[in-house]
Length: 374
Image (cartoon, rainbow, N blue to C red):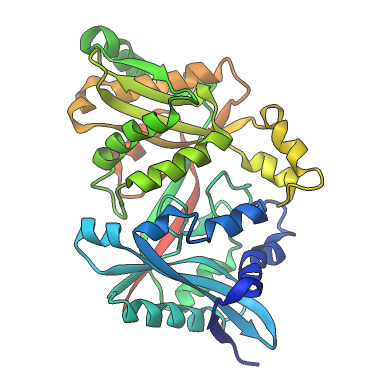
């Protein structure tokens, strides 16, 4: 039977869209089932801030009455305005291992994007680069961290067979953040000079100040990441939703702001205890016992994802990044979390890749974003 791709329409289709990866990956041993409720909320236009500056269409691939694949097509007006282009994206990519499934799904996404004035397509990403992005091409044996995709090896093979071309690789570094011996001595020397020479101190965020500190985060992010491939500035609505999400995984030990004596934000670091370790036990559901594992997450999580560590351009010379690195190692010496992963980091970001090497990091995962002209 041939594959037929149709737009998602109605609750039953939405449920099929959400449920597909559970069927495809539940026996992998490492794939982490997200909360089904969270996935449904994430796809709701009324709940996801993405839809205040973008639009999307979900598709399902059917064969003989059963779902064999899914894909989204989307575009982000903020991305297009910042980069001055008409690119679109595809995402939420899942499919069975058959050569005839992915091509018609990509075609459906392309037709929708062309109808909305797009001339190039990149992906996968769900919906943007700071959600799950890329197709995994290395590190299949490792359990993914929060907001990391996991795919079996055939995904990359089918993508290349379908004619998708590499656009960018995203790297994840493993860091044993309790082992100070792996850091180059120059990092400590730089860190020691930050406060006496430049008057910059590091403070921790609090739950009460989290939304206000998200404004400081956006200030740094929108400057420090602005030259990165795929960058999209955070909007006010994005920050409102992001702060709400952060409350669920907040740990004061790992949310840091570096400030001058006058209170100006110089740098920021947001490191997230890996809730995936808890979600693995919850198996995608709050009931009947998933909530119990969530309440006991502090006893379960022993690893973190260093997701954002950025410095404003005017403070690049101060060594404040080194101070934040050292603060991570000091924190790990007194809390349960002793190791983690840093990234993603663009393969073209020489400064950050060199910094990770100086910290004793090693690349353990690689995700590939593909592109195609429309």
